[in-house]
Each structure stands twice: as C-alpha cells, then as structure tokens.
Length: 68
Image (cartoon, rainbow, N blue to C red; front, side, top):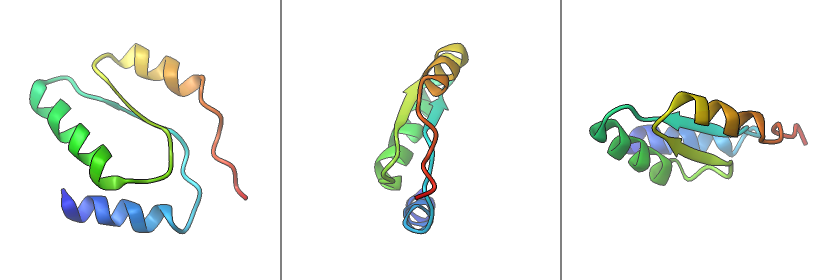
C-alpha cells in the first residue's frame, strides 16, 4: 500500500488529476480505502462511500480536472 501511495503521489506531480470516489463494500475494504487516501496524498478531491449511487452523484457534481 505504501508503494502504491508513493506511485500515485509521483504521478499526481506530473499531471492534473480529477476527483476520485472510492466505494467500499466491506469493513476491510473501507479501512484499506482510508489508508490509500491518506498515503496517496494527491491534491485532488477524494471521497469514500459505502454506496455506488452516492459516489456517482458526488462525482457528477465535481468540476473536471484542469489541464493547466
């Protein structure tokens, strides 16, 4: 998980990244998703959900990543 977080941080430094909605269906996946969000540390909107429709609604309300 630490390596994945480091890779995401490095990637985020090179290109704009849009919003990310994570959906966790089990308590274990919720914990791992929270850990990912902490380790990734990317400058992007991130939100964790337990239901897919709520995640989609949140994503649709987010502005697109700028290409500046």
